[in-house]
Image (cartoon, rainbow, N blue to C red; front, side, top):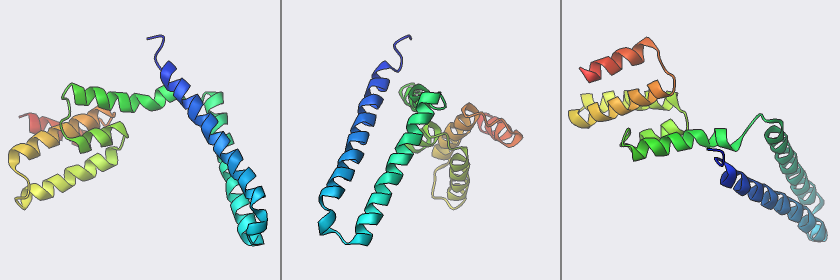
Length: 157
């Protein structure tokens, strides 16, 4: 467990260095091509590049301050992968929404499935399987409201 995140941190560092190099090269190229651009185009492009550098700096500050860690950000993805491997979820759409921690989208999908079942567009067995997956995902995301609980109990009956 002690090595968890080492590879990811190394890759993040490499990506950050590449992004910084790209932004600095962009500024250098802009200066070299200054004569070929009209004044407005030059100023606009320079402004955009400096904004990107500012955003990049803000991201670095967040990472350095401990506000954001790569391992924490990857936890959701790892849970989704583990769930897919363990067959907890079989529907890729549910896995994706679970990994991105999107309970609202999961609830929307649930409503769409209810509608599809009513109009005969979705077979009952597939509906039950996917509804169970979505409700399980909502529970794992911490959605413990009464509606989710009662729906989950209905499906399990």
